[in-house]
Length: 430
Image (tube, rainbow, N blue to C red; front, top):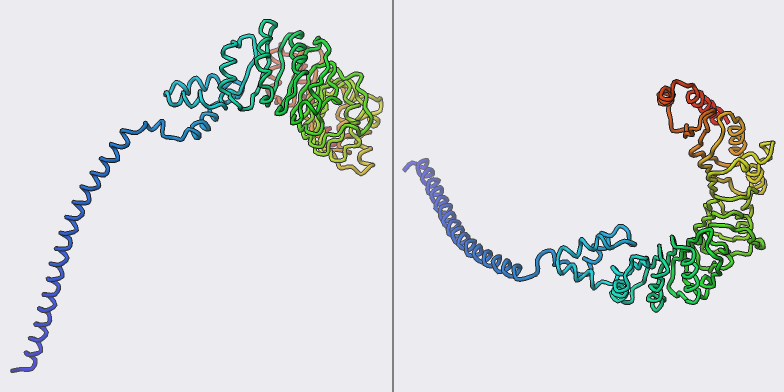
């Protein structure tokens, strides 16, 4: 037999053998696939049964609106109260959602700590609020209170150790005096903020309650329009914020005798601030406001860490207290600071009223810029022959022209605008 034929037959046999192997492998794979499909089908039945069980369990549990932890819901409700003084309106909406949410609000003491003592406050509601607040800190507002409702304060006195803030304002003078007399007999171990707003006619009373022994934790103090709001009465070692307003005539201090080691914010709206400013030592105070004063001699020479000064609504007696501008009190004070090697200040002058015919103001600004970084905001001009007063820095020439036409075509406004542009050119040159 031909050898070539034999080789062909051998190759054919091998090919058939390989085909048998492939077919057997395919059969095995199909059998495995069949078993897999059956297993998937059985597993799908099990999955569906498990889902049904879960749905049944979920249906028996609380609704989704109640599933969040109580602590988390309380936290969320807190963010829904924009003004902590008036939580009533947002809380009224919250308690209307479900009984569960209502119970959370009623049982969480944090929602009952804003106490408002006013003529509209009912005694029964005040007692209920104090009961629900349990041992939480209290924030007390005494506002628009009259004699018939003053007894509400007596309900609060047993809880004085929980007072965290006390704000007294917008009350008749006699009530303000009565409230101050009541708190003068108390000690406030947890009080952080105290604000007492009197009127100019409030009868004089002292403030023994402001002693460090009575308010050892006080951090923020605001005394407005009280005739005896002397800073010597304040717990200076703990204060971080101090606001004093009113008549300070008669204050007398020795230099560098008032120590406020933690003070970061100071507001002075008093008639004679210089004695206080010359006596204060406040290493953390960098940007003190200096407004509403009847004095005009320059203070603050001893404040080594002073970085900025705001002069708001400053009067002409400050600006032109001497016929020679280079002798201006502010200029001389800044010059002295420079001569002493003290750091250059950032000075902001805000709400300045000057005549459009006065050429001294640009010259004064040039002198000030030699000794400080001067910033001007809201420089107002009084228009000649017209009662209208405008902030010309916010207007443009075309707008001025339109206003001029509206007032009968007079040239006062347009002339004033040209004067303002001339001032800007002078200030830029200086």
